[in-house]
Amino acid sequence: MDLPTVGKFFLLVMLKIALQSKGRLNEESLSLLASIGINVDEPKRKFISKARNFDIETLFLRDDDIPLVVASGTASLGIVGLNEVAEKGADVEIVKQLGFGGCRISLAIPKADKYEGLDYFRGKRIATSYPRILKDFLDKNGIEATIEIITGSVEIAPAAGIADCIFDIVSSGSTLVSNGLVEVERVFESEAVLIANKNMSAQDRDTLEEILFRIDSHLMSSGKKYLLMNIPTAALDQAVKILPAMRSPTVMPLASEGWCSLHSVVEADTLWEKVRLLKAIGAEGILVIDLDKIIL
Ligand code: PRT
Ligand code: ZN
Image (cartoon, rainbow, N blue to C red; front, side, top):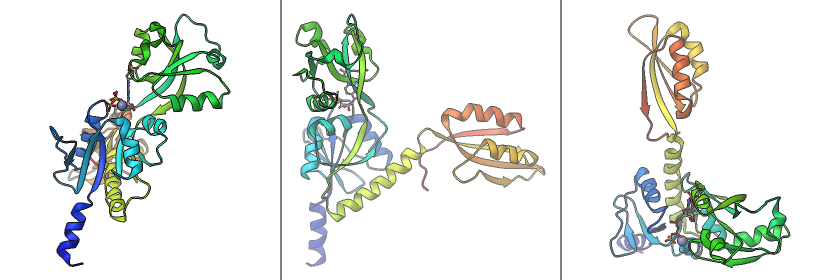
């Protein structure tokens, strides 16, 4: 094969990633890709698009279709809720939990009902869009019940007389409350995941490695802040104990004698407590900076 043909061949087999076309995961999937330097313009009429600055094509699909599209190899990668992967029984590799789209699938019953445990569900009609996950749970617990498959607005099923109780996605819980239901069993924890075809080409695997490297650097920086301050050299030992950084804080001498500059990375939710402790030992001129990436 001469070189131009090889080039053409690579273009034809560019890695494809399946993303939700609209819905709860669409925006965060695109912004995750943007944050790792992969900018995708959503096509107006087509379902396929190409990233502007990375050799990758995006397929925009309903979330229900993503697990099987990846399992079949039509796309090598996908971003979808773990709930959809489990429900479709898709034979894909779960490569990475992405830290957004968090929810759970729970059993919920009318709030007027007394609940004393799983026996409640024996002989009941349970409405759900997740029959496979529900059946698996009921079988494991030896509960016989009727599963009513409903694709939308599962929460209205008890009031509509279609079912006695429901098995549905819960996030804040407010949908249950406004429908007079109460969550009694959390069955399945979910979040958005990066999934991969198990038999992807070596070339796609290389691209996946690069994407994973970038995602890890991005995820590692989230929830962290970069701190810089001036500190009396005499207080340095105490400061290092307050600031356990990735290795240890960076220390640089200052022009004024007896002082140094200290740099460190801290968890955002411990920031104010650390600042209080550092001020108490004489830290001054404290700068707090948002972190974009941490590359180890
Ligand atoms: O059109 P398409 O098929 O692509 O989308 P969809 O309508 O099937 O799914 P979509 O966009 O609603 O959700 C996509 C994914 O987001 C789900 O598969 C979950 O992995 C995840 N996710 C996270 C949620 C929620 N949170 C969520 N709260 N999916 C749905 N909900 C719904 C839930 O069904 C219920 O009606 O929100 C309601 C409950 O929310 P709370 O906050 O009131 O408890
Ligand atoms: Zn869907």
